Image 1 (tube, one colour):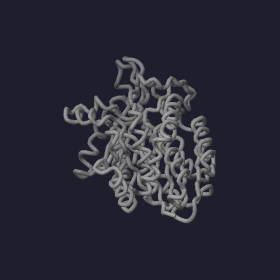
Image 2 (cartoon, one colour):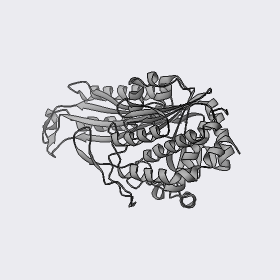
Image 3 (cartoon, helix red, strand yellow):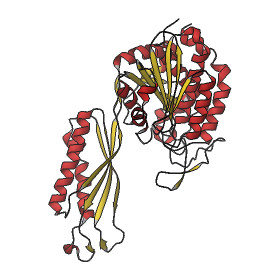
Image 4 (cartoon, one colour):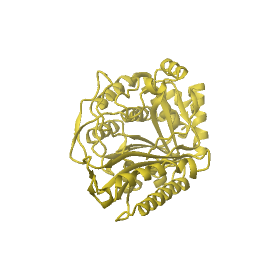
Length: 418
């Protein structure tokens, strides 16, 4: 029996409390930087377990520190925020919460990305470590982060004085529940999740009557030309096989059929696995937009507003080798190589800001038989709800058991025996 197995032998005993907590968190989701209730529940639990708790880091972020003799300092992170989504899962513990967003509008809220499961699994690992201090030595930092969905919560904690509140970690660990079988844990070295940017581009025209287009400069026509050219960047400017995404998610202009408007707004999203490609995509977008504005005789230069930046999640090969070996020992052939994801995360802002190597992995939340059948039929997209969907609902158990076990195994792969 490994040291991790010794801790996990008590998982059955603590599972009921944590499943109750999970359902409570799912019923009461909170938007980014509004996670006051969630943070309060976490603080109470960590305090009961004997952790040194620091709150209010980067807004609603908090950490629990458990010192247990000499050994490495290992940081484990869970994100806490939910999304402005109306839940349609039909679960008995489904959210009916309504919150006020940053713009002052009321919106339904749902844990449509599994952050409630992340919090529950990290708290379970924190309890197992607290209850079995004779099985390990070192220092554990359980970090609970706000506002991952905005891509700013991790950076807010670093800029909010995180380094001054905790010992410097030797390694950082994080995980995410995804649309995989609930017995599967997947990790990979190197780029695992993409960098992302959102861009609001404003194109200026000259308004006029729709029957007299020669008196104006049509920003809808200009925007259409821009969209067509932007969609050639990946296919014509990136080397074949080199990953990049440029998506125009919104085209906003005009109010009436016989009015040529003054401006057009485009909302873009970019994805890349490295900063060089990220810069290349940005430069190509700005070059194309400016050139099309010049060609159309636009009366003012275009405006570029970059928002929601997410860093590349670039896993340390050394950390991956160590943790993945522990995963294989514990999970057997259910520990697999993760395919690179086009999704994005801000987790890496924390270890990057603290100067620590890291590993971020995923695990599944759905019935393996349903998953295999859908994969064989080519219906995964319609059968297994994706993250951020109104029907996203991991099977509560054994998803919890797999996530709690994965976090415990990863932590214990670094914490030395006493």
